Picture 1 (cartoon, rainbow, N blue to C red):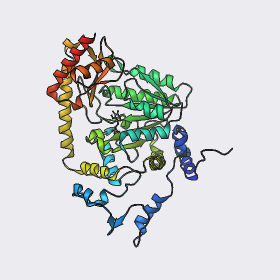
Picture 2 (cartoon, protein in one colour):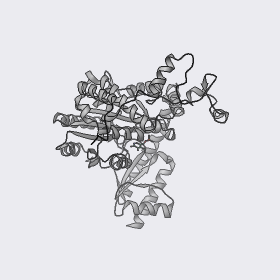
Picture 3 (cartoon, rainbow, N blue to C red):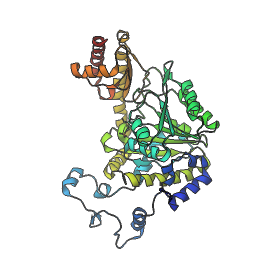
Picture 4 (cartoon, rainbow, N blue to C red):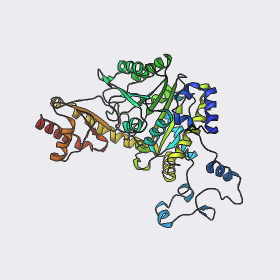
Amino acid sequence: MSNPHPINPLAAELNERLEKSAPEVLSMLSEYGRRAYFPKGILSQSAEAKEKAHRFNATIGIATEDGAPMFLPSLQSHLAELEPKDVYPYAPPAGRPGLRDRWREKIAAENPSLEGKRFGQPITTSAITHGLSLAAELFVDPGDVLLLPDKLWGNYRLCFENHQGAQIDTFPFFKDGGFNIDGFSAALEKSAEGREKLIVLLNFPNNPTGYMPSVAEGDAIVEALVAQAERGTNLVVLTDDAYFGLFFHLGGESMTESLFGKLANRHPRILAVKLDGATKELFVWGLRCGFITFGPGNAETADEVCEVLDAKTRGLIRAGVSNVPHLSQTLVQLALEAPEIDAEREAKCLTLCERATQVYEVANAPRFAESWSVYPFNSGYFMLIEVKGVEAERLRVHLLDKYGVGLIATGKHDLRVAFSCLEAGDVEALFEIVHEAIQELV
Ligand SMILES: Cc1ncc(COP(=O)(O)O)c(C=O)c1O
């Protein structure tokens, strides 16, 4: 019987390179990850032609006119300041080179632990969801275990469990008002039992809790991962940094950098994979612009590993969405290059911080203690309460029907409040209503 999934010689070549440079990383790949390669097809031939075909370049499937992409004035009239070449042609599968450079500079500047470390060029994705999905394709086979805290963004289940067939293991997120290091270490050991590889997903600042660990907790998380790697498990550690930068330090100082920086080049059996994006950080959710960046464990072979993973990821992108919208990439690149961007981001961060501070004070007021307890939060877009005496879903429906208030039930007793879309002046009224609604139901 013939193999239904033969390995293309180009994939075999990439795998051989990994075998030589980082066999641990090769063994982290899924079956599809092993089969993945970037073809020498239309795209690489037209890339060559772009450089050399000075006379006629009839390679790529866009239409041109007078040496520029063809376009319709009805579209261009809305984009008067942009050149058609930065809007209409396909972007390369890994993204606009200038955008990738700017995002890498941003990651390096915002994560001092990366100084002197070797990590890959960010690959542009159709926002973070797509990046997560690429990571799942690269590293997850049916039955592989994905370990994450028990407060999680529900879409992980669709992506990793439902689509890719992962087994999701969770551990209790909090202990004694902070991140549950003991629970995490124990879960790492237990989930890795009898397995060569484990995928770990950490999302800080977290959705739904809004929690960012302290520096000491961050270091302890890294040490727990290193200890597990020392026990012989190959660890793919995905850091979902969707809400990066929105650090408000409520109730104490938190970390202000991604665990990715501390994990890159840390241990040969750890591959750090950073998922982040402009969606939340630059407030451009619908532009669908994100990144996947690899931080191999061994600095000496990191460049080689990143080159191979880049090629494989480009192959996956080509197979899935072909490439990410060019207009979004141009807009994000221009924003990153604008001298005002830091001040603008800071101003928005301050607005969210004011709301978060208000929520922190109001939600923790003693008069509400009979209705809920507040899970630790200090960052991001969200906070979570544990409702007392009534199930969250019943409360959610009651709040909607009677009060016209929309919140999200994320667990049996957990109700998520997105303060990102609440004005500071409305915070108190909202929590008063939630309190009243709970008391009506208990
Ligand atoms: C933790 C987390 N990761 C990823 C995403 C998806 O982000 P994007 O819009 O960039 O796909 C979200 C969005 O809600 C999220 O909360």
